[in-house]
Amino acid sequence: MLALAARPALAGKSGVPRVVGASCRRFSSRTVNLAWPDGRPAGSFLPKFLRENTVEAWDVSSKQRLDFCLHADLQVTEVQAEGRAFRLCFSDGHVGTFLPPRPAPEMWSQGLMNKPRTLWGSSNTAAVQEELERGSLRFEWEELIQDSSSAARRWIEAMHSHGVALVAGLPQDAQAMQGFAAALGTYLVPTVYGETFQIQSVSEPNNLAYSSLGLQMHTDLPFYSLPPSLQLFQCLRQAEGGLSLALDGFDAARALRAAPGGEEAFKVLCSEQLRFQDITNDWFLSADHPTLLLSPDSERDPIQRLQRVHFNERSRDSWRQWLPNQPQASRIYEALHLYEQLVEERSRYVSLHLAPGEMICTDNWRVMHSRTSFTGSRHFVGGYLDWDAVRARWRALAGLWQGQNQLIQD
Image (cartoon, rainbow, N blue to C red; front, side):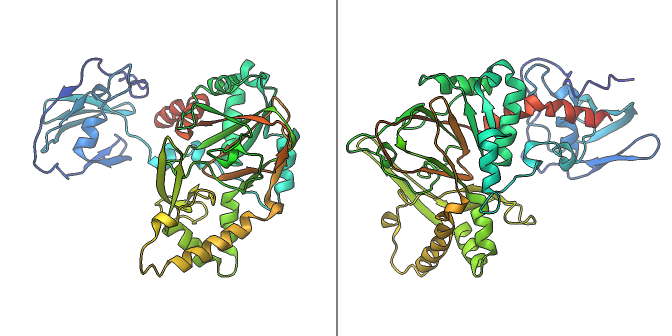
């Protein structure tokens, strides 16, 4: 009997990638129906799918496929069931072991993206505030350093579910943010503003964040083609005023769609591209985005399909987007106004007067942030993390790969 752990461990051959064959002809569309000795179906697969997913087609250490340029007229010539696997022979001479996978929804059923999100607005902002101050959305630096695997996993899950968290007890230096990223098993993402950026009031700032003014709720850097996904603000020195504010942009979108006339406004904000800009003496950034970006799986509820919010009135660039005879412009303004009214509802805000050593973390693709005006010397450090890297770390911490392999064997 074949070793059942062979496919999960990718116990194939090690070596350089192999060019097996090349052809411009159409690949065989003949489906191979595999069945177990007791008659139970194991699945229907195309010959190329079977060939490229045999254990022997993969490198052991890198977990990457070795074979490419497979023959277009590839066929399965022999099938033998062995334990929970199949021994397959192919027309190109390859002989390999194939373990049938489960359907993709089952394979990913325990993934982070399948865990529920908790939207928060006027009705439950107080509860979120409480969790940030002394509950499940508050994390301690020492815990992240000493028990990084458990604490990091819970922080990532909190950022997925609520889009906001607070970390307390950070060292009082500008390099602590790099240490926080390292505790999560990742790195900070640099932008034109640097790997981190110092948020202090200066004269003639190139960004209003570097003033003492209060700011409207916004998401950061929509003038990037892909805005940074996770935002970090660490307090080094606090001033009078300067409250840190956050708002769930997804819940505001939900409320917009549920309001009278809001469904049409929601559709406009999902379909119409708006331009954003950031101009200094050193750069001219410009990008177009819909205010609300949806995933393409149209069968799901639109609110469940929300992927990103792009809202930043300070950098929205209608002047460089003007076109003659643009009848949809009034619809865009009307829809944006309705959404902005929800964004301006103070009952939707969580509000924190961060102390030195505290850091607020927000999902920049979902949660807007701002601050109130302040007087005195206030010093924050800002930085960004990447959702792809953070989710990848969660999958490793959660043992998702091992769980998928176990699902195949059970």
